[in-house]
Length: 586
Image (cartoon, rainbow, N blue to C red; front, side):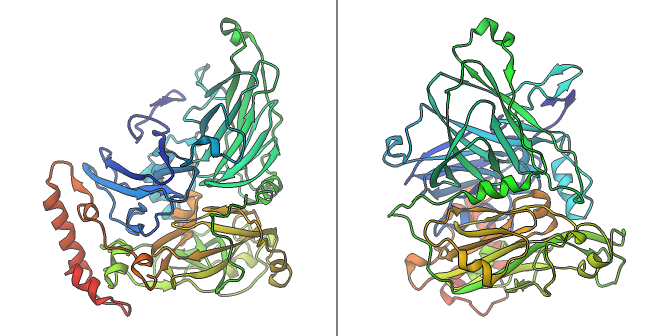
């Protein structure tokens, strides 16, 4: 692809950027064949799909499956039961989701007439992304090694940079949404960007927000959408302005100084009324919206605070109380580049920055040969790795949101040392879990979009500053909290969520800023089997044992090779070995 006067080799799906929209109906079983013609290992994650009793198909490399190697293929199969709305799919390897992504739309089983809002004239996916003039796989390696001076070259709407960008004076194409006066449009908004939250506005128009993360919300009207990486928002727009041309503008949000200020790029498309004379359309001046300040993180805080769930009798309600309570800090720290030795901190090259949860940075060792899920299912330790438990609380309490910690200094350096491990937390089936995500000022003031695979979370409350259990738990919303798969922890603030660990498997929880994920802001939540067959993870399906087979090889030989590999690397029993599963693996 050529943008900004530069030709780039780009990994895409079916020749498209964004990739194809997958449209299914609630209750469908979905089969998707992935043929990897790229030079990279790859998996596809079905973001927000609950994958009930189907963790095998979650699509996370070395957590649920081996990556699909170049010139190999893999078949994903999953049901879309009990979900309606906008989700999406993306690569979960390196930074490749910058170009390997697309919308996943789940239609209601009873048709669009069953929407709890006026039936729209048209439904339109709007995907906010970034344009990178970089080798994305190398970019991931750089960030994982603490080399962080890498930035995108622009922002996009549906893959187009728009007329704020040019090549030698020739404007880049922008996305255009043609509308008819008086008609209603459902915008299915997705933030597929790697680095930024975004404001989205359309000049002269308002939005009615009706859903987020494939869960209906109580409708509310706003002139600005705020959407973080990983989130989806469904919003109704009525074409009720005077016929003309109106800019649709996406502006990245950035934490204010003293947080490090990085290059961030606004992009814009166009909403054009069909009643405008086509031959004179370019002569009609376009109206631009007045955008918020890029540092207005409070606007993001209030936008997300306005979300509340539209109560539906068929949906599970929030548990009244929790069985376990976690307090998880999110921030940056450092480790010594030479393991086992002391080193200088505060930006010295002897140490490297990492991201962490409760002061542990997630890391899968290169020697790991068996995906986590297989090792868990067959009751053995993954070869090449040991695990460390995610603690209930950070190792020490401090003033988490003290602005003095954002920059290197004596106070910050006392808190900077961080450990690195393959960090997990195990839950009994059916456990109601409370998690307070506490954002910190440790070397950054960013918000944190936290995504939990395989589950929705009830967002009970959010706040700015430090969480105070005595004060803040009293105002938990236990009536109609929004259900989200990606919860935005506000800049220098906190978010309290509750979820039920009722989906057995090994599920990644991580920040959806790609640089935070690459730097280690992640953990694996292991949910144990329940007491019955219907609450236990089934064996891997046959096509899973034929995973990542060569495009040119037979499925039977490829499956047998992987099956033998599972057995060979699953040799160290754990305390929870199930004899029947061990026999199955042998």
